[in-house]
Image (tube, rainbow, N blue to C red):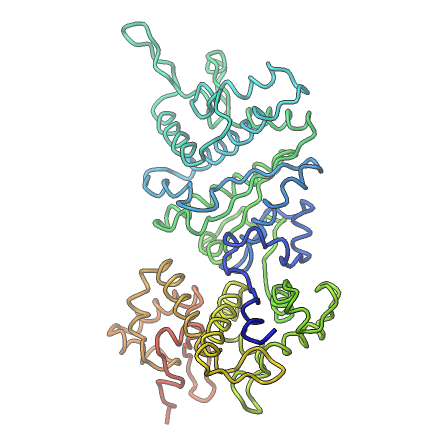
Length: 503
């Protein structure tokens, strides 16, 4: 097979896990973190955007049938595509953190009760089941004849229920003798009088649900993802809602048969815990996804070798898990050039890729790695199609296709992550277009036409989101800020310092 056709067969997959669910199982890197999650040892997964949280989430969903054989049933608490189900909460500024904690509990209770309704195998009586279902029917959160819960509708129903709960928890008798519907599921333990009228706390219903699950020897895992986009329109709502979620998570630890599995970006976690969050120290069943050079190489090789033609080209007759890291490195360099930029002190290609897609925290994620390799493939094919490619005899790619691919990835990262999520910082970033990559407070305050104090405030925010790196220059005796490679091309920035040494 000629090289152009061989390159066409090379599939690096998709940068976003939701776009490659069917293939994910074949080349997902089953790390120790994954195995611990699969075995139920992990509840909370932290990681940067594109680090693989959603891949782990998607893989859990893909293995749902397999896990059912072990008595574990998985319930996704969010739609994988479209508008996030909790986005509607951002429109309700008056909702409190206490309300949100009540909302999360009602949401998880309803999903769990819905499972019991649809999976009753006669190990508990109708009366036992109805002790959980009837209060939810009466509250209009669950429909007796509806087998499938619409998650967005459910959140809206619970939100409306909490509004009614705020107004009154007493039965009202109308002049015509009829009674007005009154919320009977309470956030706190009801009084003796309320219990006589049929009131019951959400905690009591959760305890009953947990007992019924134990009777049928089933554990439920409730998966919560997409928190980064659920509250993107309101940082205040994001803080309240996610803090309430984690407090709810800690409350759920007493239920042996109901587990919350939360996937959250580490920058969001840092933002909501700034200023203190006492409960954070109690979240122990957690992992942070981090990628080093060897693990990123392993990820690339998994995808490269998921193709028989490429395996033949690389003369590889082993499965990836049987390859040593040196063998994986050899396969990588049988396909890609040794260097992107020629020179004794220039980095090897893998190091070049990792350094170019890393943000200011020196964090490289699979998403940008895959995006870059997809663009490299596209660029190489274009060159070959117009007769402009000159590939070394033992390789598939030229070094010249990498810098142009980086420009595309740089633009995607800046526009789809930084500008989308931190629109308030966009105007300051845009003013750096065409500027040098290393700036100090004097030069930045001049570029932005603001005071040094104000410039320092903005820099602090840009450091937090990984756009700027704060460093100390021994030569100049001052602190300065540098923009990482991943953003330089998108802003047409120039290498070098914008400031001079003190005399």
